[in-house]
Image 1 (cartoon, rainbow, N blue to C red):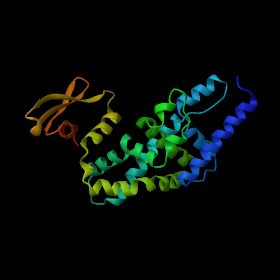
Image 2: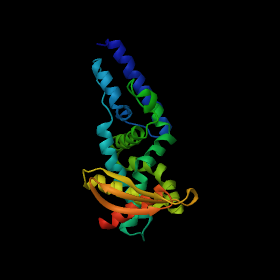
Image 3: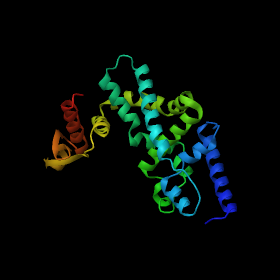
Image 4: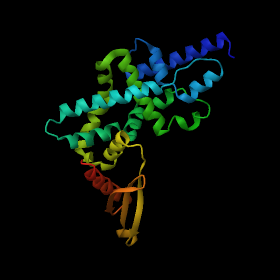
Length: 244
């Protein structure tokens, strides 16, 4: 078991690291230990626990942050796009809240370097997409608890305002795969996957056919000049099947 002095030193180090990151994101915490928890990966918390040091991991804050993210993103795009129908709003939100986007937000503020990771996670964890996306949600959750909905909104809008503009400008609202994934995660425990059915044509003019599979069931089929395009078309057909 670690001595009281060692424990104090670790707590002080964690607090300083959290304060430095708080300055980077431009938010002043009333309770800096909320951010410390948001930055603590379960691997680090488990290592500390084995040494007799209590450290709360960020999983509960991630859970809360996920809900705050969805609410605030929905409110923002609802207010911004007054003529958009539900399906279009849902598509925009799906792109904003997906793992790739959250990873990009996290990367832009150097979140990976601020995380507390266990020894087994240090090498790859600071760049792992899922780890950073989850941590971003945890940070948002910590700001919500610390400063309320307005503070969380101010923080999040700094990331999503121009991002949403770019999505619409580039016509990326037709990301059917992201929308389908979000719907499946909310309503079904089965895994969604895309299976290549066929590939034909010469190298310069390929044609791919893909099936969207939910468990053992085909929920959509699509064709395209690339696997990515075929997957999007399969997802589009699946969305139609689900009434979107």
